[in-house]
Image (tube, rainbow, N blue to C red; front, side, top):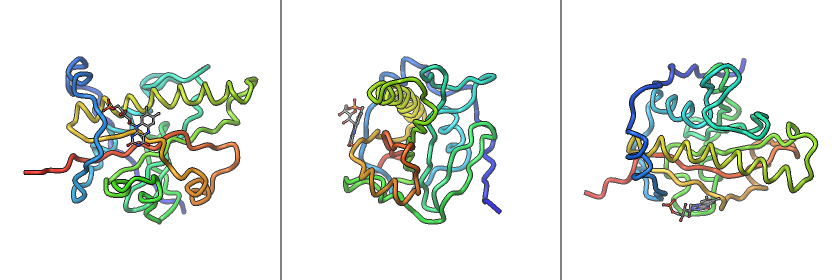
Length: 193
Ligand SMILES: Cc1cc2nc3c(=O)[nH]c(=O)nc-3n(C[C@H](O)[C@H](O)[C@H](O)COP(=O)(O)O)c2cc1C
């Protein structure tokens, strides 16, 4: 049977005031390699990124509300698909694929790599260029949600296009219509004291 991790309900209140989170938002590439995210923080992160916040609605907009982006969450314990409806993680692979999520040396050192994967078969009636435009715009909103959540929680993050997409797609067993748009690294900042 498929392994599932039921996430605790996300905390939908509190956090940093929005203007302070915007003031703190930045990319960081220096992670505390020894510190994991606890399940509650992971739950809050995924809900902030792309969770369900109302009937048929999500925390990020998507073109025609197609909701074609899937989050593949790569942890030390394996690769999971975020099931937003159940707010659960569905295990896809036992393997630690974090290091395969990028070409820069810090990739694989943080506890979480979130691969944003577009199921382009859900985007009907657009030219190939239109498909790419819509799905990268949709990707960007999710990435900014992650950035703002991380700013609010004191987490470090960077959205990345430098991803060995063909190799990663093969390892993730993606179908041709599923494209990796960006991967976002999340962890605690390195403590240099
Ligand atoms: C579409 C996109 C792709 C990016 N790809 C990478 C990447 O592959 N590696 C990386 O270290 N940073 C990447 N970044 C982060 C940018 O370098 C960063 O946002 C930029 O330098 C501005 O810094 P800031 O986010 O701290 O404001 C990417 C950002 C975006 C929006």
